[in-house]
Length: 314
Image (tube, rainbow, N blue to C red; front, side, top):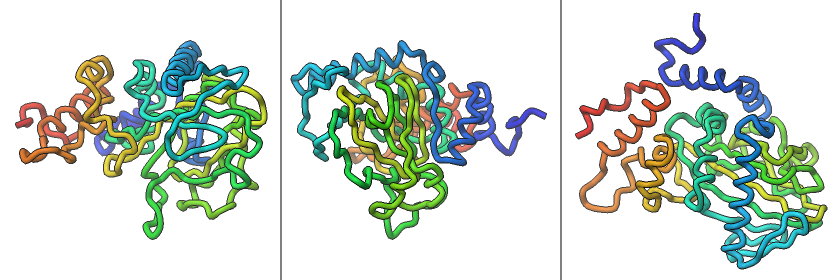
């Protein structure tokens, strides 16, 4: 018997088989048990790839701030975006800045894990970078612990996640370097932390540059203050289920050339497989949305009976 090759599992079966092909079975077990998993350098992508991402990110940072950044000395600029922090800034809307950010979004290892948690029709909510420097305070005593899910009181979060996050680590993560803080197993609480809750159980995620972190949207996390000189660089890829509002809308800014130059799944990630949000009196374009979904499922080798065949796109 071939695991996953069953009539009753037309979508999850192929997704699981892909996870097995990529050697990610331990990673999904860690996601289920602890709420996060770490792929070491060279697992999801060659180290040269994340080196290229770091170089391009530094160029974007210099362009947006007017200051040449130095990873070793900590020289940095600042951007006028919200929220404002004294220990870091956030670079938003990075996907269209360079091909490398698109390749990171459609990385097969990343997508296999995100699809396991959120489904084939999940969307990319944001691509942002955190540029962090030495500051003894950081987020303060609470470490900024929070869950990423956008669902808040009075609606229960639920055990199944609405969102999931991931981070390409571009400089070494250690506690004194200001690593992200995770509270292992906290996704099982299915709620946001109370102020100060979870700090005693928070651990620094120590991972070398080139690692890929993936975590459940209900996991409590924050960050430790950076106590060393230099900069901490990371690019986060935040995903959510298709029924939630995204943080960054790329549907009307992505070009046909970018879509043609990337896997079909990118169009789904950017919400083009969703017919709603139309901008004129013609109403929803179901045919285009269905075509986008069909091409992505076909590319992944998945047959979804809920999507019409091409001959039905009218």
